[in-house]
Length: 451
Image (tube, rainbow, N blue to C red):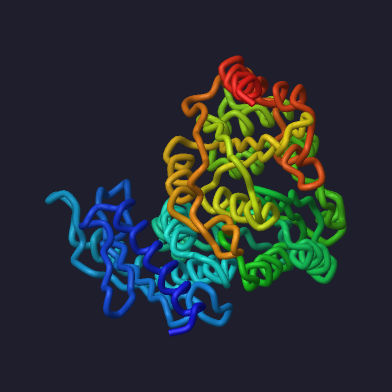
């Protein structure tokens, strides 16, 4: 057996051990002979208190995870009968089972896309995280849509107004997991031009597209956008308005005739929708489907709500060294993004023998803990011989809930840039105080004094 095969086997076993330590025996298990990991999932319809068990399988082929051509073989199937309260009707159980069967290809495709993003490296954790995310986002939207499908089909005229001349002004708000790739940003604009669609779109996490045009053009645009590969994409809101002729349609348009990119600030989308009188349409991006007096899409409030909800929990860590710094940081960013966390890596030289490196991970408590667990069990750096190795010299300085008033205005995405890695110790103090208050600042200062 070659050294490369030895390394591949060792890294596969490390992932297997991670699964065994992260999940209970009834949640996940391993077929060592087949090199397959099984994860038991429950797809639930909350209103009906019913769940359909699904068995997700991840098979590691020869050469995984080193060989870029060795990609996880992913499949899923309904494993048992529906579970739920005894009062759950047979019709409801049968309907949910059909919804699950129809949506499984979507979950499998989402998991496969995640595996492709990590080709040539460990991807089990990322795929399992994507499956959980699909259930909590995509499947919830699928269930919500399916609950109205019969009504929509029976009364289509009521939901999609039609005029004698067939002209209807339509609008959509499309929500995606993220919009980053230049190819997708270009396609969003070009497809809008082809279909005479106008509006705005926000890049980053999440991605938001707001469109306006003739109803038939809106439908065609959405169909083409959906045909692209997305981690998650759904129409959250829509509006239709009858018009007597094309002149009236153009007069009633409140969005630009062309598609405009707004950057990654949610408050910009909120402000544009507010100016156009589309507050209710914008609120659907947060799954608020009726306008309430207490709801507001004031730009600054929206920005604060978005930021603070993202940073409810955090961990500040010290890393002794990074031999493969670029690769190490890339792994940290991918692992954090896969769990929905925000990452910040900073180093200060301060005339010492080696830089002092601190890493901040922010997000929901369970997500931050998941990243930390994966960090401790994955080969994130290389040893003195250049071989992948586990991190044995990472220390968690402080971990816990964050003080919201102190971190709500911190622009993490702009701070975590590769060309801004090395900064002064005072700059790091200021950043950490803004994120975690005096406790985080004091932990870093104590670390400085120990050098």
